[in-house]
Length: 262
Image 1: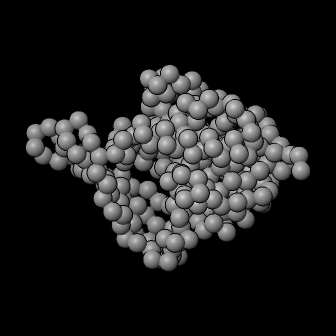
Image 2: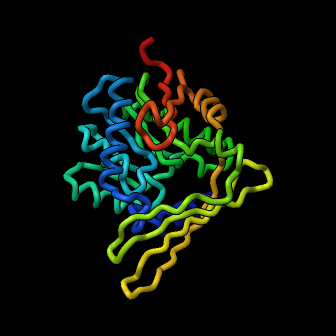
């Protein structure tokens, strides 16, 4: 599909610099892995879950979960991101099998995983109800009965009240000094979708700034919308958890694959 290649291109171009979104990427890996691990253990009581991160990016959540003892497989639509995730995992002593895959067509058999994760606002790259349902149906298919879905998105219920035009700048360390990351948002007429321009200003070592711009589109799905799509895809017990309650940086939707023990 055309939008798949556009999203892949966005993350291929961002893969080498994605860590600059974080003040300290390794600390972010540890923090997010700890928060997701706590949810998995509370819901499934498993020490080493078979987990699929189906939008693994450069590995932030997948590596974090691997460091907590889970057996993680990572897939992403971006070849550049998957390649870096595998390399970063190996550098940290984490086994992370990877593959390039669209979350709407996952290359696994039915019931292969205890947990499927799609974090960091990945699902809202899908811009139609049909595609969101397709992705969630695939996530349900590869989960065992009673398995756990964990999704995170931006807090769109709050964002839609204001429809902001930009995000605040974030500053991080880079080899030649501090880098700056910020976003510009251009909302569509429907009031739900928006085009995003992702800016990174990175010192080039000569006293000048290297300005890097990537563009993509998102759908600002509300929590009720996403819960409804999850139920339609065969999940039960959808529950939204706040960042304050989990320690994760975005709200989390958890749900169970239908067919598990009552």
